[in-house]
Image (tube, rainbow, N blue to C red):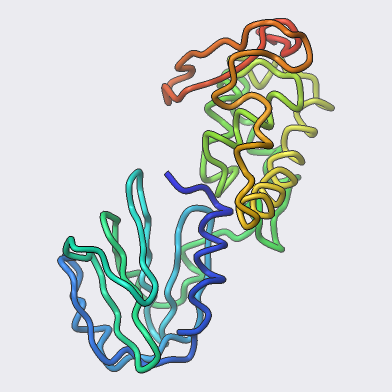
Amino acid sequence: MPEGPSIIILKEEVQQFAGQKIIEVDGNSSIDIERLKDKTILDFKTWGKHFLICFDDFTVKIHLLMFGTYRINERKETKPRLSMIFSNGELNFYTCSVKILEGDINLYYNWSEDVMNEKWNPKKAKKSLDKIPDEMICDAILDQNIFSGVGNIIKNEVLYRCKIHPESLIGKIPSKDLKNIINECSIYSFEFLDWKKNYELKKHWLAYTKSVCLRCNLPIHRKHTGKRNRRSFFCTNCQKLHV
């Protein structure tokens, strides 16, 4: 599943179509795609893992899910979920969720929850975490209403940086460590963005998919953790378990 930084890259790549009129539409999406024909795109936005195509009175929300892809000015052999043709090119989405959000997009999203948005509010994230003291930190970091845009790669790398075991309970983690985790979720997301643009993301991974801890020279443990049952990579020696 693409994480927030990858959706930021998508937004940057499609700027050629901002302000352009859609002259043809196609796709097997369940929405009324004909509604998009002859409409002008006012803006592109992102909220975490959601890609938003904004029109005058509604917004098309694209969620790439686990295996979604897109093509700009080219096509795949398979039928697109949504295809938009412009006078200066085309934009095609595959294997994704497509929905229409009516009215003002600001009514649907709290931008302060997005770790890469200029309105990101770490204090709000801390208050949200304080309300769920019995949750594992590995689950909370993936909660899109607290850390919108953070996915499993960022989760693993942030917890390794902060030396916190993924199964630690939020209420047991020292406040300074919890604030460090919150800040690193945003910091790492922007570093992720830069590395991905330079095609060097994987070489910066310290824990994700690794087998040996770089700090301790001990085995990295691999386990599906928390109620979300997502893969975690961690060192039991330097990542403290708070329970």
